[in-house]
Image 1 (cartoon, rainbow, N blue to C red):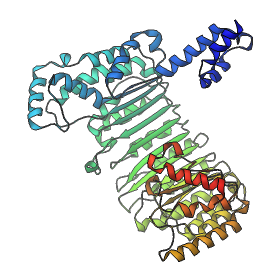
Image 2 (image 1 turned 135 degrees about the vertical axis):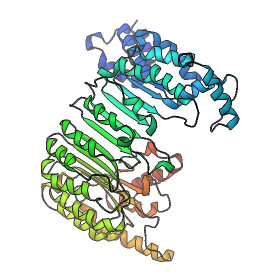
Image 3 (image 1 turned 90 degrees about the vertical axis):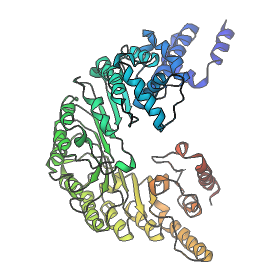
Image 4 (image 1 turned 180 degrees about the vertical axis):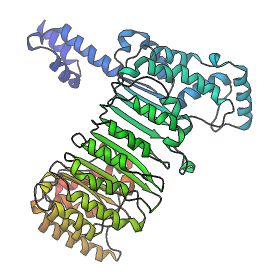
Amino acid sequence: MAIARRSAVNRIPFEIWLQIKELIASDDSESLYSINRAWFEIAMNSRYEVLDITNLNDRTVSRLPLLRDSGIARRVRHLSISGMALQVSLLKFIMGDSWIEFPMQRKTLSILNRKIRTLSATNVLNDHIRLVSEIISGLKVSEYTVKWDYIEGIQSAEIIHSSLQAAILDLTWLAFGSTLRKLRVSAVPGRFHAVVSSDVQLVCLEELHLHLLHKASDFQFAGIQDVFPEYASSFLSRVNPGLNVLSVQSSSNLDLSSIFHQLPGFKSIRRLNLKVLVDHSVLTDPCGLESFFAGSSLKLRHLAMTLCHRAVVSADRILSSLAMSRAVIPFLETLQIDFGMPHPELDHTLLTELHSLFRGTRTTLHTIILEGIALSLVDLKALTSVFADGAAGDALQNLTISIQSLTVEHVAVLAINVPHIRMLGIVFMRHSFVPDGPEAAASEYRTHFKAQLEQENIHWKLHDISIWYLCRSVDTSRWDLVSLFPACVPTVKRFFGDARTEAELPRSTLSVATMFNTALHQGV
């Protein structure tokens, strides 16, 4: 009997067995029933934890009827839906056997609009969407991701949209809005209000992510406040004041002033992510942001800001607000700022504000990420000098900087001013990493570079190093320069170990990571 039990256990995948061991009491570890029961629970939760309806393909549709079972439905924790997928499903239903290609031809549009006008809004829904609607009514998910992208240009699209809003969007709020913990909303400007116009109180919400989708041609047009000004304030007023995470991103001219004035009501935010197009209309009154920093001094831990500059005037206001508020953000752990390649006239102002900000840092700040502004040697020396001595320098563990080229002097400054960092990220703003010239000169440069590394970096605690080109893509052409690090900094253990791991790299760049790892073991 014991042999039979052991063979049954051995048929269980090892990874699942490790999880099962934690679920079974030591005095019950020989019970096949307990093992099989725990395995069953893990398998069921793994299979149904995420319900992704962003693509209504045959496989997804075939699984939907199973979710009518309340025992299976209760296992769903994360629901993802796509307006585009639902809209396309309806369009195909309305067109019948006719083949639909996007973008639609004029003849197809004419036929489609004629058919839509002959249908009432209640009869438009097809079987797939009726089934999705039925399932949603029985869910109690804690995480909800809705991407309400939409195919525009269809004359009678509003009929379809009103049907989907009633059958999907409104129903989700009624089903689990009051118990929802994480919400991610992505939508095109004209459809954003449809997602957030419900009156449901989001009393349990802990994370809120708002992302306004834009085509490249619409870059200069409306932002969230322009799209639904009457909904923005009321929506945020229904959100749990104990919200922990807030992310607002838009590629538009987003006037965040009124949102900033709502922020002081959220005194428990630990992570704030803002993507701002810095223009004349942005932060004309930054008091809301400063008030938020003052009121959130004991809670805010992570701050990430992307500043896409389109105007020189007022572009430094966010940083100056930060610098003035540094004393009331005593426990900030992560500061990430992407400057979006600012106007040259801004460089000096931004760097001055940054230096003021860092000068007020406390011992909790362990991660600084600066992208989109190329630091010269003088800039790098000035910005890192505040970490050269004292507790603030000891606390800093992770530093990412943007530069034009990697020089021996850059490395020397880092080795002297931030010797305690364990993770270093370097983002190159241009293709060329070494001075232009004949190959012999480049070889001589690398020899000098290696000698300097051996001299300066002997006391570094560096473990991880990430080397990127602009936009966080890997440049495969000059890995030989960077491969000197593992030989000269013996504590380095990983490359690409920061935000983008090797597993996330495009397949074409995996060979580069392999070369780095080979260099680690061979001591290039």
